[in-house]
Length: 254
Ligand code: G
Ligand code: G
Ligand code: NA
Ligand code: MN
Image 1 (tube, protein in one colour):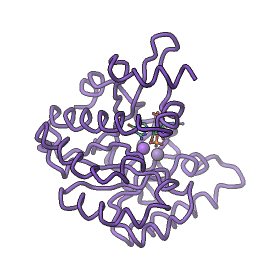
Image 2 (cartoon, protein in one colour):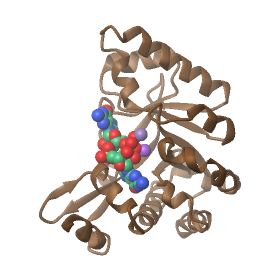
Image 3 (cartoon, helix red, strand yellow):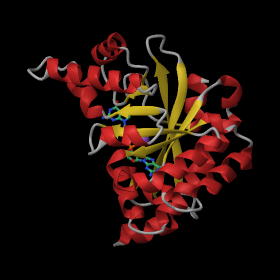
Image 4 (cartoon, protein in one colour):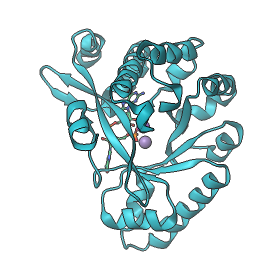
């Protein structure tokens, strides 16, 4: 409908921007990186969430354009912020629609080269729900990205199928535990023990494979403390900071 039509022109009209949500190490609470998140400022409707417009973009070729733009923008921002010297990581969400393209790796290489960002500063986040059907296609792309030094994270872990299979077959560097698990962690309800148990199992699984773990959607101190106690590696969420425009991220955290 109209929204689809508007979305087609959003990039060229400069209505898209990236916000950045910081991630912190546990237990030190040291800044270790940021996740780039797309924002669309619609001239009439105001800010529209990517949860709404990414699925629209994924229906067609638009996701490729948006994705390429976000990747380049995030890489250049990371280079401007000197992520290489500061040993910080820039996480960028990538749609499987992008990832499965034969020109994806050259595109990543070009985005890094365009601003001189070392590949080791970049993490690409892939959502497992979409990924599990593509595991076959994925292996070679993983290897090629690995050669560039680029890391791959599995996003929203625990919400899709075949998690374990994926972990067996593809070399992920990082695993992001979906916020639904984090929310149940310290809610004091009947589910408490089982949520903590699940978290422990996921941490053991990841750590046994040499994969580090980010908890997303951390909103309370109680959640933060439990995650620290359980040995989670990193945390991200409103307790620590919401996603921020570039200027604000830099003035608050860099
Ligand atoms: O920031 P927010 O919570 O509204 O994001 C909602 C969803 O949109 C998240 O699942 C996030 O992964 C996704 N998203 C945000 N930015 C991008 C992006 O640049 N590319 C893709 N493919 N998804 C994104
Ligand atoms: O799916 P993905 O994890 O990429 O999306 C991250 C999204 O989660 C962003 O849109 C961001 O705005 C949102 N988010 C970040 N921190 C929190 C939080 O603490 N609680 C909730 N409910 N959402 C969060
Ligand atoms: Na993400
Ligand atoms: Mn996520």
